[in-house]
Length: 268
Image (cartoon, rainbow, N blue to C red):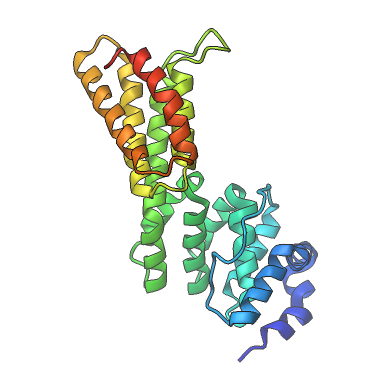
């Protein structure tokens, strides 16, 4: 069996090159790594991705991203693998998506499985990965297939979010900066729904569909059937937030925006 730590120390510069070496130095110096190492040493746990707080995102150089992806397949050094995963999903984020798409084609099962999981963690901003995920739905690895199944809901939400954005984009913008119109209000509502951690992916998708209905009704204010659909959509949104704790941001946002949206659409 390979001793990954010794191999890592001896061949880092030769195999990965100076730039990759700098990326690994960043990884070891990061507070994320120290927290993961402590977590792994204390529990000798599995590859648990949720143990470490998310840090600020940044644009990562390609060579750094590729180094992190290679290190997703360090089964004997879970701290390194976990830190690399967290660097990808909590720091590199969108900048890592193209390389993660390529990683789905890797010969290494761990890399394919963890790349799929990372795409899901990045969420709706990784919507460009949908075709690549479809291509590996029949992967020989059960772990890869399971991870792809887990992220499908997230990416489906991304597709719905794009449709909502397009529908809102067809509404006219307000001429008064201090008095937001329907377009601006629905944009705020969409953002609040997508950011609400208390909602499941399914509930977010359903709520966003209602925002799309409201945008379509706003495009044709004289359309009676659309007005009725908008009325129903408002009721669904009110029912959705009614199940949430009063202190949640979405409840606060809806209490402010829905009455104004109702008035602008002319529904009761």
